[in-house]
Image (tube, rainbow, N blue to C red; front, side, top):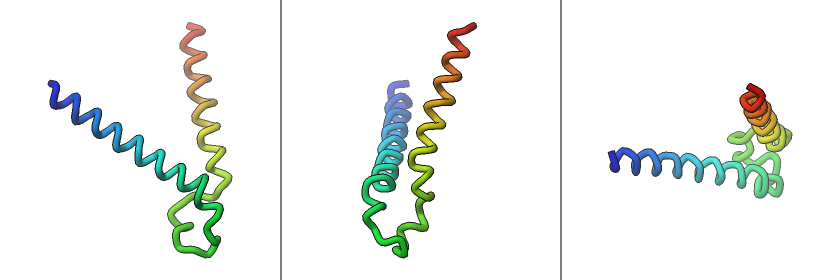
Length: 70
């Protein structure tokens, strides 16, 4: 069981680090790269950099508020 817990923990850590690295590059570094550079095709438009986290927070808070209301 301990090995499975470590594997799951490692997997979650790798996924979290990947998401953090992708988002950081997308929000902080990409605006300074020329718009015709090939790296832009791997990222969504900049508007989604704010919209996606906003929607995730809004939906999760609405979900938890519904749970507390029960």
